[in-house]
Length: 248
Ligand code: PEP
Figure 1 (tube, rainbow, N blue to C red):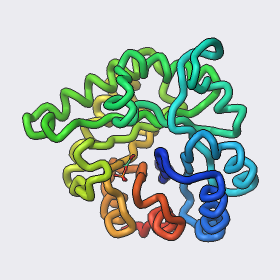
Figure 2 (figure 1 turned 135 degrees about the vertical axis):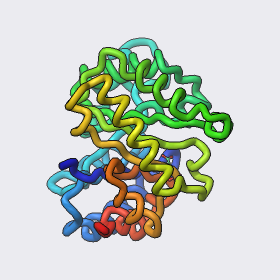
Figure 3 (figure 1 turned 180 degrees about the vertical axis):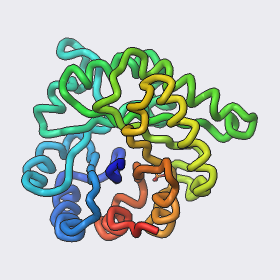
């Protein structure tokens, strides 16, 4: 039985003060939540504050990115060891915005995943196809390539996979539960080819315009184990409704 996993990706939003206000409001709203992993990924600048506030709660912390080197002359980058030290249990790697705007290739991401694991971080590894790729029937091919290359020689015990179709991110267009299930099932088959029976234990999250209104139907899909949520995670009320989804 896979434990549900609900993660908030705030991207480049919220100051430290706004992070503090969100967490103050959010903690009581999810105190009696489903037995789930609840994760917040604020910008780097807020990690320290968030870590202090989340101690002793049922909410965990993630960074939105990490570099693959441990230290050195890499101006502007953040080492995975620094992220562990800041109180994070997780790091998001391979988000389509990192791939698209910052040129992160499968090979770079594979180095990042290795480095994150060396520093004891659990990895939320994102994959997903563009609209053009979906419409030209290349979805499975793209997902297979991203999994095979990004997870090369990576063990799966600290791995969470997030399927985020690029056409659904921030667009208000969610994959239907049927589309999500079909794709998650394919991803689990690919994970089984990499990790054999251990693939049954890997959480696969759906991301792309998840809201309080569509989470119940998505979570009812047998291979959807949680959500990676952008826009609807920005307000404590809205993200708490997602965390408190109803099992149907
Ligand atoms: C995301 O950025 O990971 C995401 C899924 O965003 P949104 O929920 O806004 O589509």
